[in-house]
Image 1: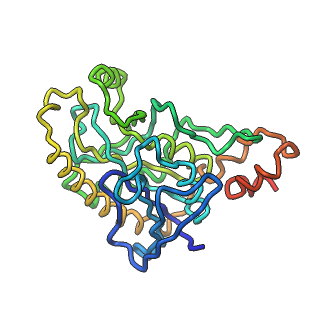
Image 2: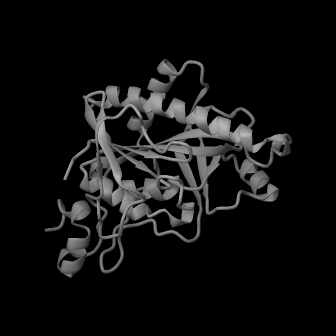
Length: 290
């Protein structure tokens, strides 16, 4: 199977990376079913990159329907060490404007119907998730964005609140999130971050602001045409940022703790882990459980 060191998950508006060369489409079956789509594996800045459209080509998957476990497990099978997540978000703060890029460092979970762990079924593990974003990866992305996208306002830190969807927030919910100090709102990244941590993959979110959430007094004047325009502009900025970031990350060693997240996290006694669980989770637990 083809291998890639860096994975990119594209959100709304970002369904391909035109800059990839020597591209091959690769289907990656997993114990958790099929990923959202086939992977596009190609070369970018001399590095093999695996790109996956989160919602599938043509945007066929609702947020709750995304096979998060299959997506991240497939990344692990492909040899991915770092995942760059590009995501459309709504702003919960006046200073975070449409087309701004936010690199959040925290998540708040408001989802209800989604598996967000590989474990269970006879094996228990509890990874540390106090700091859910790989700070090294986020810092590298932010530096590249500030240097290479100088016309875009870039923001460091903040909390991404992950809601269930697919409907957007009520005004009461939006105002509550603002009062809690949340920064941006989206529907997808929390599960990706949790699963990437369990898979010992670095993960960082590139939150691309498309609009203010419904709390904003100008919300009703926002048109579909405006949103589509912001999505397209954000997608173009995301493609530029990914290309620049991959070049910088090419020779950068992983000095973070992400690569050892499971070292002390598996609680189940080795002799109690079933052969089935060992096979099902081999890509993740193989270096700790034989």
